[in-house]
Image (cartoon, rainbow, N blue to C red):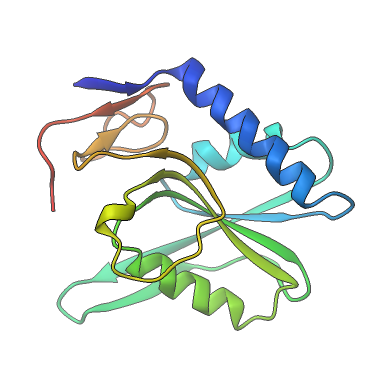
Length: 168
């Protein structure tokens, strides 16, 4: 495995994003909605990096290639209507899944809706997305560590690594 971003670099970047969010949402209580399960580590660290009150919740989505569909496997526990919502994802590639999530949550009439991602591959984007906060750009390689896995392994690593060849 090849080291992409070490634990200190990740922690520093998460703190920077936390400060940006604190400034942008001053006087408000944002709700972080993490996409399970790879974003859980990022959500936990990000919410601690935002000084002041915030809340978090999780959703889980599944993609079905045969039907070319996406559906929620787990939904938010509380209503997001009238709330400031920040969707937190582990990695944005084509953006198709996140576009579905964003449209679904926007239909619930939050006060605001923003996207935050740990890793971004803007050069592979198909869907038009407004990504407000991004930690790092990802190479066209499979990435593991810091919550991201390969066949259920490597989530526990505190750094991010390129693992093998690109899996499209």
